Each structure stands twice: as structure tokens, then as C-alpha cells.
Image (cartoon, rainbow, N blue to C red; front, side, top):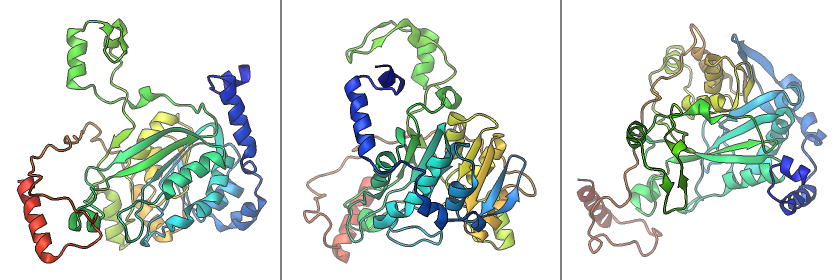
Length: 388
């Protein structure tokens, strides 16, 4: 009972079931010597060093398996190449082979992460080629990390990008059988059920209704839902706990990084995530002086955020071109953090536009056939009327 309680299980049966499935899984991480031999330390070298951290040029599998000290990292926060159907310039992997490709990384991540540390993976979904159906690769990755490597899923987050274009165009704009894909999954995992964290580090402003309640008070009572709203509900904690839906528009296009790349004729990394994402998790899950690692460094967004927040950090990236651009975040001066964190976004209520269902028919074939020019003009006309 003591062991079950210490691991966070409510009953002995849940604890026994956990032990059973753990023993049925693959060999524990840290035993695969083939990975260590395949990615030697000599494939990595220092590229740039700042006050609190450094950029490494090379293969992050070598860093995680052979260079970094075991159990030395407080947070791994990264956005790996997604498992997309179409190849991108940054070298994404095929969706159907993604888990096999990711295993050496997972092995290394488990090796270097502290028991109190966290692994945060921002990963977008993909579509099955030629179909308006979704790949399951990112869910398979999550299951693999938990069942094969012993990570715990602390909580899933979802990054909603309000500025995302309506894609995939074929299914959204042309055949009109799917809606805009504007959300990435972010898996927050850890080696133990109890990584260090404090959500008071990441509070958001109170809503107008909550501000009114704090000012004018309320009557403590049992709600119809069964929630007991006690007198403690009107305590001002400095802000509200944010949800696991992160609304961050990825619209930066004229910052110091982009200017540096244009001036030096260096390619701009096409898949940068906004600095507010690593800032959220770095503040939430680490203390100043802790070590933060981004194994898919790209343009080093994680590194510049960690530098501003006085965390030690390491970014590893294989592309020298992207690293030449990343230096623009640090020289001639450190790029500051964005300060538009008070900006908020609204999601309109679904079905808020009036439509004539007799006029706008369902596509009975589910979009199997591409609309002809005439039918497409009719669809577009109806759409414009609705937008108006």
C-alpha cells in the first residue's frame, strides 16, 4: 500500500497492474548499446556559446547517448520534424516510419532526463496520402514513449495557431469536406509520475466575470453540477490557471532573426515555433539555473528563451545553414522575449452563421470526386454569401 501510494496509485490493484505491464514491455531504456555505437560523440562539435548556454552542431542522438551526463537535464522541450507526407527542406520523416526513426532519440532522452524533469514534444498531425483522413503517427509515438520507454503522460496540451491558413486546401477549400487544421499536439511526459512543476508560474489574467465576482462577492452554495463552490472561491490568486489549450499566433516575420538571415543571405527556417511555447514550459517546469535541452534546435528559439530566463541550455542542430541564422538571435545583441502575452483570441461559436440547408447540400460521396468548375463556382458563391 505504501509503494502504491508513493507512485500515485489509488489502489493496490492499479499498482499491481502497472507492475505487470511494465514487466511485459521492452527492455528498460539505457540498455541498447547498438544506439550508442551508431551515434558516436565525435559527430558533434560546439558552434556557438552564450552566457548561459551553447549551440552544438551535429546529431542530437550522439549528444543524448554519449555526451550529456546521465540524469543531468531538467527539461527537454522541442519540436521534431513532423511525420509528413510531403518532404520539407528541414528533412522531415515519413509518417509510417516515424516511431522507428524516433527510438534512438527516446533512448537518449530517457538517459539524460532527471527523475524530476520533463519531456515536452510539440508535434503536428499528418494526412493519409490521397484521402481526407488522418495519420495516427503522432499518437503511435506517444504510445511508444509510454509503453516502450516508461515515460508517463503528465498532460497533453494543444497549440492553437489562430493565424494558420486553411489547410489542407484540397479537402478544406476545394472539396469542402474537412475544416481548417490549426492545432498541434504537445505531449508533456516525464520519467516519474511526479516531475517538478508549479502552475502559479504561468497564470493568465482573470476573465471579466471573475473580476466582477472578486469585486462584488458571491453566494457560496452547491452547484447543480455537484461542485461545491465554497467561500474560498473568491480568493484573488493573482490570475487564473490556464487551460491546456495554448492560443499563440505564429506570425513573427520581421524580427531580428529574419533580418539577420536576409542580410546574410541565409535560409530562414520554415518551421519555427513561437517563443511563447518554450517560455510557457520553461517557466512552468524549471528554475533559473536548470538545464534545458532542445535536440532539434532549428533556429534556436528554445535557446534564446532560456538565455533570457537565465536557464542553462543546449540546442543541437544538424544543419549549418540554420545555425548560421540562429546566431542572429544572440549577436550583435540578445533577442528579447516577446511582450504581447496579454493578447487574447476568441474562438467563434460553431454554427453561428445562418445557412439554408436546402440550398447547401452535403457531399454524399464524401469528397471522393473533385467538384467540376461549375459546381465549384456554385459552392464558392454559397460560401461567399455565408461569409457576408
